[in-house]
Every structure is written in structure tokens, then in C-alpha cells.
Image 1: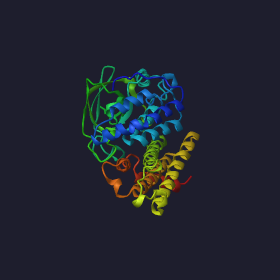
Image 2: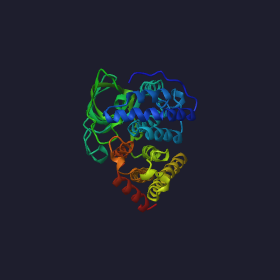
Image 3: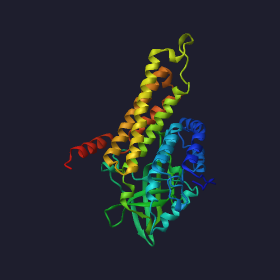
Image 4: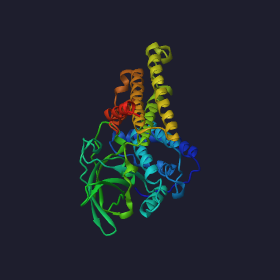
Length: 377
């Protein structure tokens, strides 16, 4: 992604307000991109200009260093307008906030942070190489980092490369030749040694643009090797940001009925006069309250440093279930009209359904929560 001209914002409020103002445009651009199964490049440019790329980065590196609550709010706001793009922002927020937290001793990582803050693009993590069997479930990571003067050369194809067309850097999992230990590197997306293949032809989250990327000898300097704990998907921060994604999808779907979108009933009867419609809307509002409460409470516990990884995963799972109920009730309120491809509801429905596959998975979340409860203190 080419560097953008970025106007400096002064606060989290400024950034969130700009993204909120952009929401109708992001919705329209996302609707067209979803229908055409392509990445919404113009939306990405607008977000970078609004300050989203630099939002999680430390001030010392040119970022805005927004706190956890503000960052999750950004993810939710984008997701309400375009869930696929919301996933791209979510991955950037997760990884940029952690990878660039402490760059002491690494010139390469510090330079990458400054480039992102200046508008070079977003950051994500690239691990998977299979269509199924994720590395978190024991799937193989065959990527190789071959030692060379001053660092390594990375050779691999990575799948599910979320927002790859918007990335300027990525955390890449690979095994160093001669060493069986899986390592993580901050790798520049160098057009000379990388290629993107259009493979993302899926049911939902189409605008996340999670295509394949091939690294053909991309150079990684020695000091771009990252501590493994920085990129672990078991972190409660990972789960909390994804819960914010689901909250945004639920918010976006709910607005379809809350903003006067329900059609007039037979005989010109207003929706509020129909008991069954009121029931659907009330149920949707109740479930949305649950989603909001889950995420807000979890953010508070995370800020206090008391949210465990198991609890974070549980919040992610519970938020997705409650958001699914919101979507179901909104669809019922619209009736059969909601399932038409031209109806806005169906994209939220598809995107939330596909989002259920984001790690940690349901069985892992439930097992970890049970272990926390049953293990001796």
C-alpha cells in the first residue's frame, strides 16, 4: 500500500468522530466491494487518512497511543459500517499495539512503526498455510527462513492473509533452517519479492480481502525477530478486540431497524403498531444490550489487568452468540425481504457467521474456561 498523506489528529475522540462521519461512505463502498468480491481500497485510504493506522502505536514512534477502550470502539465503529473491513482494522489493532509496544534494541521494528504511523499501511499476522487445520490446532507451518548475511530470506505461501492489500508489514510465522522452533518475524511487504493471489472467494467477510500471499526470498533483518509471546492468539487482548468486531456487526444490523428502516405493514400500519414486530425488535435490543455489556465489562477488566485469557475467549464466544441473536431477530423483523441479496441485512448475517471461525474456536474457549474453573488454585 502506498504511503498516504495523513492529517494529524489530537485525540481518540477526534479519530472516532472522523471514522463515525465516514461510516455512511464506508457502508456504501463496502456494499459494492462485497458484491464484486474485492477489497475496498478506497475505504482503506480513508481510514488511514482518518488516523486509524497510527491509533494503536506509541506516541514516541509517531502514533496516537489510544487506550484499549478507544481502540475497541474504533473496531466496532468500522465493523458496523463494513464488517470485513472491521476485521482488517481488528487485526491491525491487535498486532500493532503489541508488536510496537517496546522497540528497544530493534531498529527494524522501530522503522516499521514510524512508517505505519506515517501512513504506509496496516499490520497483520500471517500464520496459516492450509485451508483448514489452523496452526492453533496443530496444523503444520512449513514456511522457512533461510539464514543470510544480516538476517534471513523468507520463503512461503500464507493463506487467510487478512487485508493483505492494505498491509505494509506483517508478522510472519516461519521455522529457521536448522532450527525446528517456530519463530515470528516482522516482514515488510516488498513488492519485488512478494505476490498476492486472488483466492478469497467466500461466503462472508469478503471485504477483508484475505487472499494468499507468496514470499519469494523476502529479506528480514536480524533484529526483526519478535518475541513469541507478542503474537500469541491466547492473549485476552486478541479475544477482546474480536468481541468488539462482533459488537460492531450487531450494532450495524440493529440500526437497520432502529433508524426507521422497517417497512410499513399491510394497510399502511406502522411497524410499532404490530405486536410481533415489537417482539422481534425488543428481543434484538435485549441481545444487543448483552453484547455491549459483555464487551464494556471485559474492557474494564482488561485495563485493570485481571482479565484472563480464558475469560477473554469466553467473552469473545458469548459476544458472538448474543450478536447472532441480534441478527436473527432483526431478520425476523424484516421478514422474507431480509434474505434477498439486495438487502443490507444479509451481508451482516453472512459476515457474522464467517466470523465464528476466528480463533479461539468455541470448543477451545469452553475447555479453557472449564479448566480455569476446575483447576486447583
